[in-house]
Image 1 (cartoon, rainbow, N blue to C red):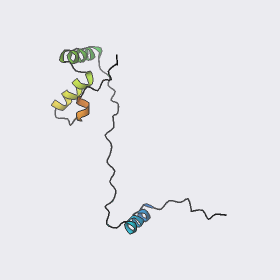
Image 2 (tube, rainbow, N blue to C red):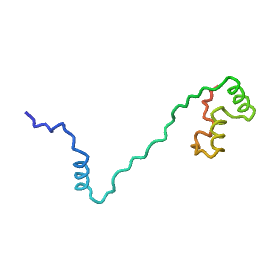
Image 3 (cartoon, one colour):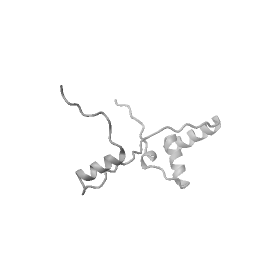
Image 4 (tube, rainbow, N blue to C red):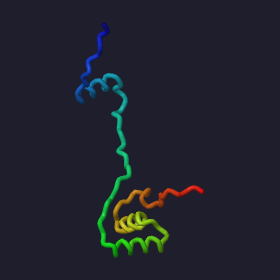
Length: 92
């Protein structure tokens, strides 16, 4: 019968110690936080939504672009991807 390795994981302190012994000159790994899309849901009056829709249409923007641009103009740090029209286009 084979001798199986134990199924327990090392504690964080033990893992750091093992990493320091294995590669003492390498810096710790840094995992960048992803800036993934998420959903914002708002309730507005129909008249407000109609005004937003009409303004976006007149400016040649999507509703999302209009809102993101307005927030950016107000000093809110908006990701560049949220200012672009990323509407999927139909092929044909």
